[in-house]
Image (tube, rainbow, N blue to C red; front, side):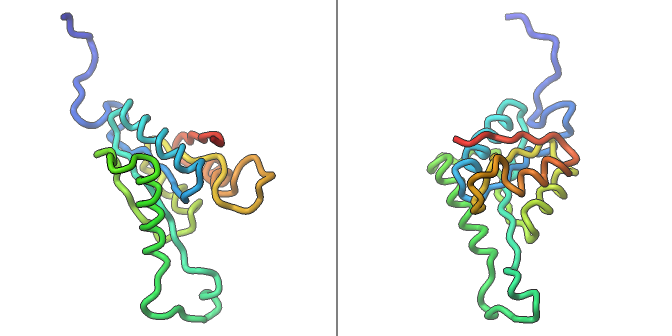
Length: 156
């Protein structure tokens, strides 16, 4: 069989510097669809996929109220990652997936990560309570301020 004239595949995509696909998850159906899309894109481009669940202290603690010393929202963010990965892939988690929790507001975290990402992938709407909106606030903010291309996966 004749070999095509193209660069050798070495585990990272040529031309992209091996930058990751970044996908935000929040347990919504559209974020699960975005996760599946991000992994398919990572497979096609031979790139890692950073799966992000951002967390922040509830605003009640900003006024000087302190949370119980043994409580943190980070374990919930980890559960969000685990639940999203299990829902999307069952026990067959793709090897290219790198789950991460980030201590930040979701839009702020994803925009910051876009500086070193190949692409950011998001669901069209998240878990917010405004069902009449065509796009969620995090998705709109990331689409407006991202440094890299953004793929918005429609509702499922």
